[in-house]
Image (cartoon, rainbow, N blue to C red):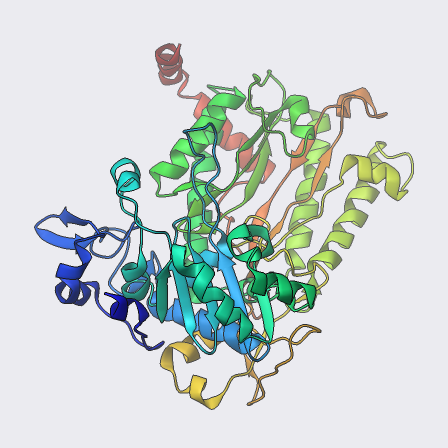
Amino acid sequence: MATRLLRTRKLVGSVSIRKVVSQVFSPWHDFTGFSTYATERYVDVGQPTSLSHPQLLVEGEITPGITCDEYISRRKRLLELLPEKSLAIIAAAPVKMMTDVVPYPFRQDADYLYITGCSQPGGVAVLSEECGLCMFMPDPDPHDVVWQGQVAGVEAALDFFKAEKAFPLSKMHKILPEMIGRASRLFHNVKTALPSYMELEAFRRASLNNKVKDLSHYTHEMRWIKSLSELKLMRESASIACQSLLQTMLLSRTFPEESKLSAKVEYECKMRGAQRMAFHPVVGGGANGSVIHYSRNDQKVRAGELVLMDIGCEFHGYLSDLTRTWPPCGSFSSAQEILYSLILETNKECVKLCKPGVSIQQIHNYSVQMIRRGLKEIGILKDENGCSYHQLNPTSVGHYLGMDVHDSAMISNNRLLQPGVVSHYDTFHKNPIYTILSEGAMVFFQDEMCCRSLHLGPRRSHSNKVITIEPGVYIPISYDAPDRFRGIGIRIEDEVLITETGYEVLTGSMPKEIPHIKSLLNFASSTATEASDLRAAFS
């Protein structure tokens, strides 16, 4: 068995799980469980595979929609971006506990998932030119298997995740110091850093010598541009969010309560295939809508009030983010309509600015000018100084979106939204999968941390960046403004894909024009009898 743990694998190519089962049936039974799907046996690696969940994955995919080859390509690209003789350490997200025996639902760290495809806790991935991908996997514990089910181990790391090397986590303190000692630079994911490797003498020495840097500068740059596979998942995530919020909007006239609307949108998202919400839904009725990230969701929405709903869902690792504001009663008051029209016009004008050569910061500055001018004309802002405006809208007009809600946080909002310039070695160009990905997912960059540059004829790639556009206004009850405007919060948020020539609104199917909203809500009210029956059933 020791020989098997140390064997290496080629980076290119994939092995069918069916072949793996036949080759390693005997050695695996000691620590890896088998399950039955229909009449076929398969290896349980602790997460869905094409054999265990054919409704989610096709053969060759490690996670739904993302192939083994794409994960391998990501690792190659990261190694090309890092300085020579670098070692990257990426830890999985930790399990967080709600009580002493009840864990919070687990969500994998985006960088670890992006590089390995492993959605399970407890692992540490190490990447270098010398060893390729080396995964330290949690030691098998029969007690945990009984209570929590199978988890991926060393064999799964080699055969399913396609690591070149894999070891039990208990051996990391012996093996990792040698790898660190041979590296000239160390990079690690600061947000998921673990004492288990940070307390190693070799790591401490490298840190004291200023050789340890944050890997996120590189992984966020890679994640900034989406591959065609990633875009397909993001489109579906956005579609689920739009359909779910639409159903919730229709229900709001019958059940104008924050808690019920929150429950409804989560139900609809999950029934349409989302694994979880991207964040706790914001459902702010009336003055609660002026609290930007309001989360209590425990109040009734009174007649004549607006409700602001900011929601998003996660579809196989990729998130959506969408906000709409509407009156559940079916009609806007004059004050509500004036403010809503200002934010809607700002939203639409800012979306028009989304194209290569423009930054989020530039779009934000334009939105500030529009809203500030409009609020002054309405009589809410007495002057146009920044301090007064900041009280009514302290947020940015948008952010990057992807595997995290605020994705690629290391990328400045001042970066221009333009197509990436791709450069690569001839050997990469000969790799078909690499050539495909270079059209939609590659990025070339140089900064003070990147000591290497790749020069072999730059190629234009599709931009494929996804951002949000979310202008808003939030007027507290205590703000010195005309009474009719106090306690109103309005935000209109869309997801926008930056393309070669402009933009595509991924959430364009969700109504935001005032006539459309009125028509929808008043159509919903025409089924009042059925709604009354539903209300009785809930009471």
